[in-house]
Image (cartoon, rainbow, N blue to C red):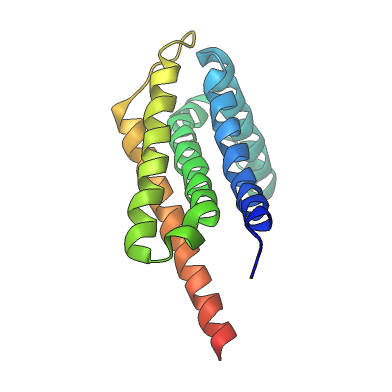
Length: 160
């Protein structure tokens, strides 16, 4: 039998990835609007230069700006998909059944998304958005389901 102290340490260690992702999301949300936009725009410009190099086709500034909103929404979705994975990793063993894991993990992620959007109201040139909370929650749910499907398949392979 595993001692209570070892189990507590193990649980704390399993929470570290989740806490790191939460801190990362918080840090990105602390960026003033202009800085946040410049960060995602810089990522998009780098991606555009790579594609231009491969296709020998230039992108206009207008087309890059049109993609900017999409890239920002993809970032929301992705960071919360990663958060969903880390939440299930942290608490999935404790909850055991998928019927409990999905709603609890999703509730944690959705609550964090809501508090993050509220936090943005206090950041210069940023604003919170209910639609972003919904997008974040869908991203989290996607990450949760993918993680559970992968781990379920791995567990089934181990039983064989």
